[in-house]
Structures are given as structure tokens and as C-alpha cells.
Length: 159
Image (cartoon, rainbow, N blue to C red):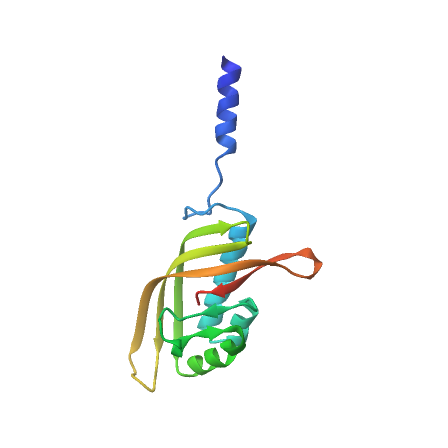
């Protein structure tokens, strides 16, 4: 009887996944790699560095900007010039991001990350005051195999 209880307890414990501190996200190599991409994205936005964002993006990148009109749509081929133009208009950029959830689709090597953000910036041509935008967003990433067999997560949409 005691052996059975011990075995049941061990099986139950083996199913428990460690969480990344302060989150409900499973602590895995993939979730850590995705958080690294999110951190690099935040830094690239704050530095207003379109090339750094390109380096994080997948060649299949497409984003509709959250609207039905094509005016704010982005794809990989237009990403650099679109971001460079947008970044020229803003100053003093701060981006806070809080990842809430990661959902993995192992069949397609994709992940959907739900996060909240607060973006503050100045647009000198519009106003001297700091502008703030806060929202919930989703970023889709895809795992790719780089040269040497190393896996890398790249942004497919959601910037």
C-alpha cells in the first residue's frame, strides 16, 4: 500500500512543471527563448532601431496593425522603411511589456504570446507632451532551425 502511494505521489510530482518566477508560464527552453525575443524587441523599440526588429522578424512576417484598413499593414519587405519612418517621428520611447500567457502549437512550431504593454513617447511635431498607449496584444512567433541545427524563435506578427 505504501509503495502504491509513493508511486502515485511521484507520478503526480513528475507532472508538475516549474514556472518562470512571477508568472504562470512553464519554465522551458522555448518559453525562455521567447522571453528573450520579447526583451530584445522591447529594447529595439526603445532604441528606435528598425534593423534590430528586422533581425527578430520571420521572412513570413505580416501584421495588419489591428485594423481593417491596409494603411497600417506591414510585411517583411516593407518593415524596415515603415519602422524607420515611424521611429523618426517619435522621441523618448519607453515600452513596458508583461507577458501573460504563451500557447504552443508543436505541430506548426508556433507560439502565441499574450502580453500587456504600456508605450510612452513624445511626438515633437504633434505635441511636447508625452503620449501613452496601453493595451493587450498578441504576438505570434515561429521556431526556425538556423544553421548548425540551433532553434530560433522569430516574430511572425504582433508588433
